[in-house]
Amino acid sequence: MNRPYEFRKHIFALRRLLIRLLSATAMLGSVFAISSGFPAYAQTLESALVRAYQYNPVLNAERARQRGADENVSIALSGYRPQINAQFSPSLIAVRDLFIDNTTMSATLRGYTAQLTINQVIFNGFKTGNQVRQAESAVRSGREALRGVEQAVFLDAVTAFENVVANHALVEAQRVNVTFLRETLASTRKRLEAGDVTPTDVAQAEARLARGTADLNAAEVNLSISQAIYEQVIGVPPGRLLPSPPIDRLLPVARDQALAVARRENPAVLSATYDIDVAQYAIRVAESGLYPTITAQGYLLNTQNTDVNLETAKSNQAGLVGNLNIPIYDGGMASAQVRQAKEVLSQTRIVLDRVRTQTAAAVAAAWVTHEGAKIAVKASEAEVRAATIALEGVRGEAQAGQRTTLEVLNSQQDLISARARLIGAQRDRVVASYTLLSAIGRLDHRKLGLATPSYEPKTHYQQVRDVWQGLRTPAGQ
Image (cartoon, rainbow, N blue to C red; front, side):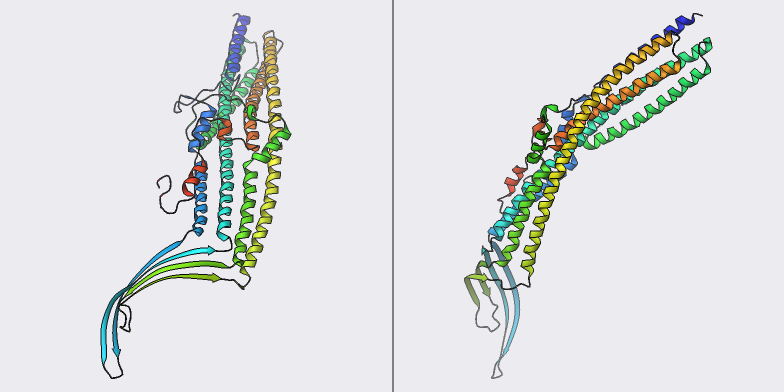
């Protein structure tokens, strides 16, 4: 038997497997659907974000909440408008009158009372105007909260997308690794039969195959979990996901610039700023309880057959009544409400300071994480290159009898570990760029340039702001 020839043949087979391993995990872009149940079409990160923008239930629920908040302005504006009420009271009255001369008179009155009343507030201590401005500030705060939810959903979508891409690449790498280890074990057993190695070498190859199988199983479990989370966030199972680059083109070039942008555009900061306006107007609303109020009432009254004295059969009245109410003492309730509103304003200002501090910390953390991810990718790429060269060298030395099977297995394991770290670093690099974009407040559909119809909360607000009546929503519900 030509042992050197057989040994070289096995080495060449291992080399082909190594090339397959490197090509399978060279970049995160080498991703293919591994389940026939998944769609075959390619999905980009942009298309995933578009679908999340349109169908994500968390985002749509927040939009519905904001539409409900829009109605608070209409409710506040109703204080400027008259209140019109109509009342109709039919009656059936039996009357029996006894006079001084002991004579009686009986009658059955079938009558009614009909009244139309119009009430109009003339002055209420500026309460209505301040309630309107308070509601408008709350609407603006809610819009920023909606933008914050949109950013959170987008970041979840990016993370879910990249997790599937990374985990799928890891599964492919581990599958090639298991194939490599099986071939190694088979060749080692043949060499044992030929007397070139000892049973220890076979046991070492078997152990590495068992570890590789366990690693493959763990990678497949993680992939299944990430696919389920992807479907939860995006709304559809992942198909063949195409690689996506970092979003560096939209990021500030310096850390100080990022902090300045966050102070101006982060939705949490802007929402907390509008909350201060809400609290300030709440003080003015409470102070209105200390002012006099002026109201006017006009009415039309028609009565028929309701006079039990049997003197009037029908009566018509029309009137206009003014009312001035001056609060003298209400037990201290209005004063307590004013003090309470002032404390709420103090609390809101403290919350704004806290939000600004948290935002600055989030930007700083996102910035250093993003910069660290760049370094990690470069380091992992260098590690993969070095591990590849080392494996080639060890295999060549093993072919010449200067290295053992264990050393070849160790070098190959080092390469697989380096490749896994590179895949993770590339995933972290993309997620970190979007995290930084979210921290400064620019992770929204406009900044990303998504090809999707834009949901404009102002549209619904304008549709309902000045509506005087009607039960149907603009959507027809």
